[in-house]
Length: 447
Image 1: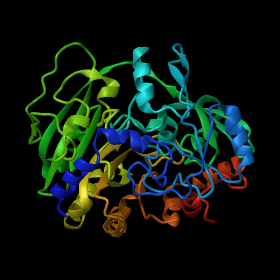
Image 2: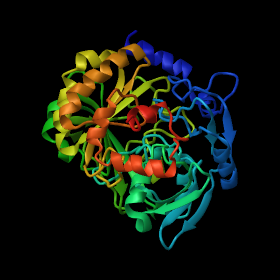
Image 3: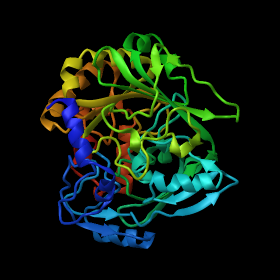
């Protein structure tokens, strides 16, 4: 099936009304992730509306995993025994204007939180490409947006509360708990049930978004640093014709002074209409472009709340490489274009700032990320992942924790130097492995 036919089928199958279905909880059909590629191993779901209920459930269950907005493409959040839903614990608990922080329940999504913050005059430093995901789940897997100076979403976390395997409540903060906090902020669901998060804020701001088409690959290689000098920049490519199909530039509006965007950007031409990252799809579910000013949360994501994110029926992989290897890594992937392109919807290239969170792919290194949104052709993608990973291995590639990958546990241990400390911290909070599933046992606790 060619790409255009595949996309037409997506448009038919995944329209705006499907949002309610993929956000819905278990019903008559088997419980799956939002893209439909993963069927969970149980549909037994417990619900909690308070921390006392969370503690009771944790005490009573031998094995348990928290089930969030189900955006992970692998089984990092899967369970054979039972899930705990914190969907109802989605309140803004406290807004501290003096310290510029907000404390939220673990069930809240960015789509819920962002408009509230903006109405109070505050904002987050960054958002992921879609706002439908939960704050706790995104931070636990080091989910990110883009920007040379922007850390992943977990870097905004300054405090958290979690329930450990014994039902005890543990509170950790960046200032008070130092290394223990840095080990828990990207916890991969291994330490306990996160019930609250405290996030750093900044004054609200407005943004503009511009899109350019057909950036020559040679210009990208020659001017990668200049191209990524904007507040948030994404490059979209299908690895064909030596081109970056689209360049999305998100710019903060610091003054009321008008800004005239050039009609050409390193050989790319300014788009004349709103575009979807996958050119064949309608841009109606994308955030506003063409330099129209809007609130920060209406521009930082690629996709608007209330619409099907991205393509819908898809698979995703993503790899982080040290920022200084970005161009070499991109060229290495481009050499595989004949193998990759037939099974691809689109790739996205972004940059992320370094951080000090133990299990973050950007731990102590600024990164570039190469993301693949695949057609849902699992056999082909399964064969391609090790090929791509082999090409990126010389650059100390790290896979996204919530996407599909084949990187071995031995290699993960080699590239995550704080993994021994993370295992020690996990054993302290969960000595009998109540929160461990097949994914965590295979990739982290396999000794």
